[in-house]
Length: 470
Ligand SMILES: [Zn+2]
Ligand SMILES: [Zn+2]
Image (tube, rainbow, N blue to C red):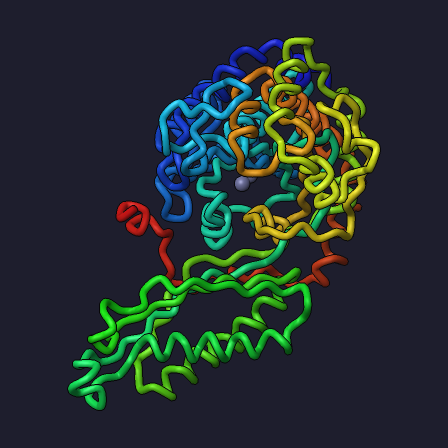
């Protein structure tokens, strides 16, 4: 483990430079060409073999080093969010108005995971550690695309464990379950007609949309309370004087478990078919994306907390603390409590500005509303997620405050802690087969031995063209 951790310490500047470069690129999902290339260059220079274009996505790649079992994979992300461009200052000030920014800190996420992978490669070289280390360059997490399409291609299937992390308020692990989800657009095709002169000759696609929504709103009474179904009408017709020939409604169906989404979605689909039948409109179903809930592996998660304690939490400078206090001034009244309560954080952390300890597991068995494509990997292999304090306690996710901290010492310092924590966890898994076996046992128990089935239709392609339209 010493070699791996020393490598990270000695290369902290190179890692910070890479994270900063990606922070500046701030490319949104499936357009992360420069960010992906920067990571590939770094990995190739360190002797990794890289396969690009994974899952039909030009910015997705798998980098591999070593051979044979065990195979440990690090998951990295690098996509930015639209509209969150932000300078490295503690007040709202975009680099470019309306441009994307790293409001989820994925510039740090990908870099720390990559750093851990390279550190393990050095450990292998120095100590004769046997096995394979992989780094997965996963694009478009924010739109729940990258890992789901990569998973459908089977690239995670032979992993013994997947390790990742997420920028956060606290140094700990993330065990909360995220929601499984389907995102689907329902298009109804009718027949245009003069709405006053010949309404009897028209078929209103909008009627079909409205009837579908009524059906689904009645369905709400008969689904589990934790399910979330939301929709927007994206096309409703042109003018009242023309019977709408085309109308579209876009649905998200979410629930704590994938099987629950499957059940509810089957009923929503029947309702859509019913609406088509009632109006005579033709139904077109455009499946966008779907993902699994996040299943944290308890063995890997505990190992991650122990590893974080071993490598130690970040220690911020006076300058960083002052920056953090200024960020805090931008919060709405009561925000810290609302945010920290929402993530089930230990109460003693709510009033802090920056977290400088390691918190024990606090969110096992909780549900965090929202979805992540790490969920899909977590149903394929034993998966754990570290969190480190890359932003100020009480910061809202997907905000300029996250982006600002991710471009400064606060984010960078905690990114290096994440890299060290991930590398330490992997060293344990490589050298202690009994721990890996326990993780596997817990995984089989939690999944009841059921194999992962992709939520995507087999012929669905990644939404590359769709992006070009926006
Ligand atoms: Zn995000
Ligand atoms: Zn994120």
